[in-house]
Image 1: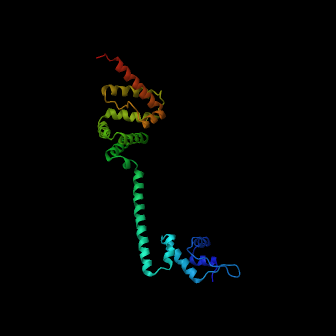
Image 2: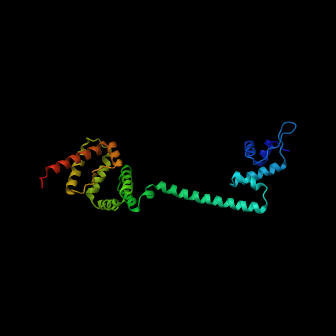
Image 3: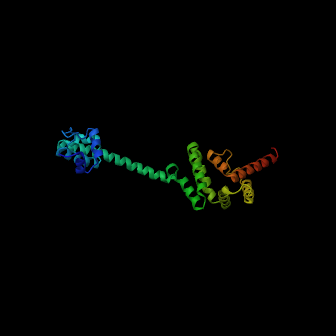
Length: 245
């Protein structure tokens, strides 16, 4: 006869595990003997080893009780059923891993390949990741709120890559995010942007109604705020200066 400690050591589990099996009814708990100790039989040791083996194989504890003393055909059928369930879980976990891998890439998960290609091309030109994220978030919102505008956005962006002056100004705007709003470079950039806008009147890349994401960037970049405010004032002066009719 074995003490609970000897029983646990025989099956290579802890005493706490044995007591847990008692609590859930998986392993019967013997009565105390005249000395006040619980003594376990060899059958208890065999059952505990079988419980541990099945649990280590991934069999749910709730199903182990029915398997301990099942006939060979019943045991085989139950194991096949359990294996089918485990395979289904493996397939589900594999799918979750694929989804997690897609989430790691971020852009590919929510944007079409044409948009992702534009973002990657901007990266290759040295555009900061902060501006890339702005473009990405803006395009995500645009795709969700106005999907019909996406083809135009893609065409406009791709055409911009072929305009050296537009790309020079784009990169300058990217670099200006951290400039002091009164840096002389900001004044020069404003003048260059105004010149470009006059030459491309009606095709300004400056939004009339900034998105929440763009507004957030403006609050974080006083230089950008001054650039857009100044360009807006100058554009308004040009409109009012035009003769009526």
